[in-house]
Amino acid sequence: MGILSKLKLKLGLKLLMAKSKRSKTKMSNRDPIYMLNALWFKPNGGHDTYKQYMAAVEPLLKKYNGRVHSNFYVPQNEIIGKFDADLVFFVKWPSWDVFNQFVSDPDYQDIMQIREKAITNSLLIRCAKM
Image (cartoon, rainbow, N blue to C red; front, side):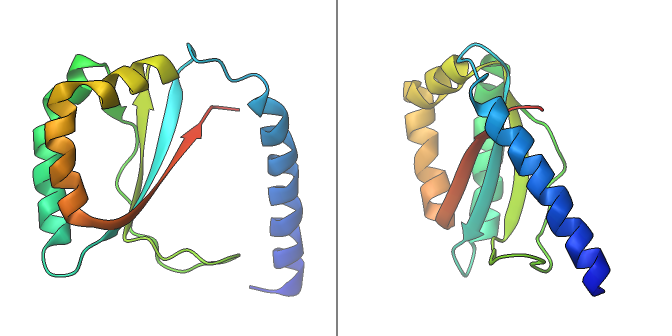
C-alpha cells in the first residue's frame, strides 16, 4: 500500500470515528444492536467445540430474535494496529435489553460452558448502525 493510500485510509477512518463517537450518545437500550464477536480458539479442538456451542445456542438465538447478521470471517492481516483473533462475526439483537435477557436465561448459562471450553479469549463489542 502506497503512502497516499495509507493517508487516505487514515483520514477516512478518522472521519468514521468522529461520526461513531457522536452516535454513541444516541444509543438506546431499546434500539437494535449489532454485537461484534471476535474469538480466539483453544488449540486442539477449540474450533470444533465452538461449532457445538453454535448448534446448541441456535434455539435460544431464535427465542430472543437474535441472528447471526454476517458471514463468519477469518482475519488475514492487520493493516493498522494489532489483532490476531481466529474468527469474527456480528450477531444482531432486537435491543440491549433483549441481549441481557438472553445471557441471563438459565438455559444459556448451561450452554455458555461449551463456549468457555472452546475459547481462550473473546471480545464482544456492542455496535449500532451509523
